[in-house]
Image (cartoon, rainbow, N blue to C red; front, top):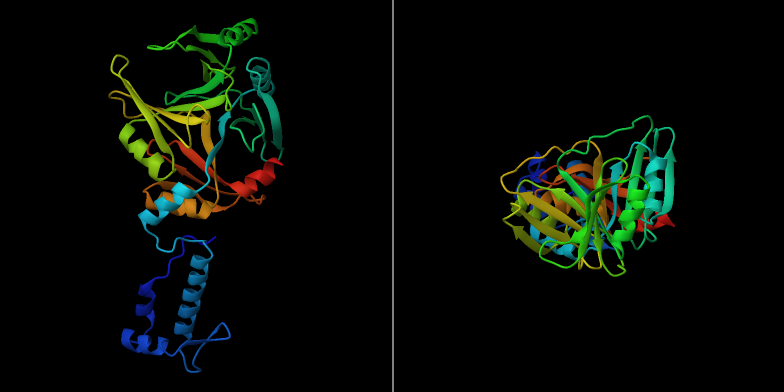
Length: 347
């Protein structure tokens, strides 16, 4: 809970009545009796406060609330052991009922839950192909009275793995939807792919696969420096680089990042287009949410990896759910959610 607290030896220099040698001698007078640290009756008030602070920090360290040594190596080791999973992706829509109808009737998703915040004037709807405690989901965010958003040039598409792409495309067409790529083979392969748009213009890449354990399989974002982004998502977010693919003909390189094999898990696809270093992110796409065992340690690890925290770790006002958030080098936002709190939220 206090992962940002670190004992500071500079505090010793603020005690005017003690030299470092005298203070060391007085510290040696301390002893443990019945588990309680005893102070000499003439010990200075400032030194007493210092030692209480030191004792508190040691308790925090032993309880796991902060790293034993706040080094990048310790932080990265912990990140690798953390039980992380991509939970959902958040984006804004102009007509919630219309969007829900599209995703349920065209793509076969189910409404998992809704959250109406009348005082804050927004409603969230969570949709997907299975329970949120085991599957990736989409979170549609509707802000009262706002009908349109700018998707920008940075957001790419969502990936959906289905076993009959032509049938899905026919349904989308029959309902007046937009097909931007008719079903056909992937370049250099035999798999069928198609691209459609939802009512707000978000692109969805349909990938034909045998029944998948995670049909909501991908979020694609464009980045300005692929090596820099890979390093950030490995060190700060704890993802693994699953593969890269360079396509000189299309003048782009992609990196697939995730927490497990892409055929079984949702992945993040980072796309670098040759020579383009900046994109307009618009105001439509919001963020990805990732589960973590400890948002406090996660925030510290992000800082040590050079990441920028946009919300310090702690409970959301009015809720018990603990979160922290950061942005990557291109400004894409990630929110980390406490695993136990998340499971309680979706029960």
